[in-house]
Length: 245
Image (cartoon, rainbow, N blue to C red; front, side):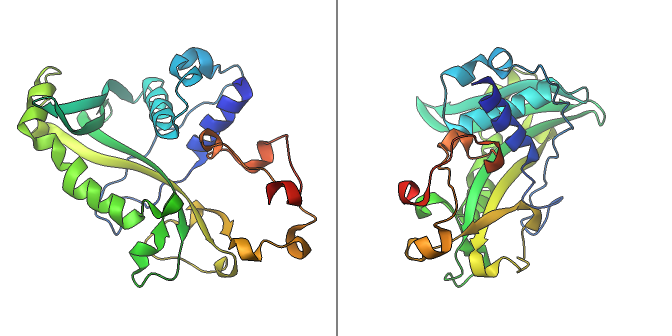
């Protein structure tokens, strides 16, 4: 378990930002500070909730929190603040931190995604889709702009922020948007607009093209979702073509 958690954390750290600066999306990226990955790092001790909470999104948030808490540049103030109105949850503020170098207070939304590129969509932005087509890059960008970031200026949020001696107008809003991208096998040589092409982690194929003649000599690994950030080379148990099929 210890090495598995370290692999997940290392995968999170190694995942690039989906764009630089504010990019085409006009959302300013927050750049994580460097993290010293020392050999005796025990994540079960540093983040006890990892032993019981296996949801990938929550795990990523705890990794982000650890990096901020261990940083000399940033001060961690609060995280995962539920904004409610009459017992109805309006949304969540991911992180409130302070940049000690710039003397700035920040609101950070943490996003960690996996997208595959489907060229059948007419618009380039719509072609990056999530697992089971339940999510897409364009949908998430719209949600950030129309819901998650404006949530900061709701009266209910302002009341909660006052308990931390913070005012919405004094907070700089950024996103930490990391992603792993997978493109069609025959488009691997392409350069894709709008996104950081360093995020391309592999390719995808249709199941009908997954045949024994082409792939029968390979070995395979089907990771559980908490292990998605990990590079496959770190896995020790591999299965053959017929088992994975």
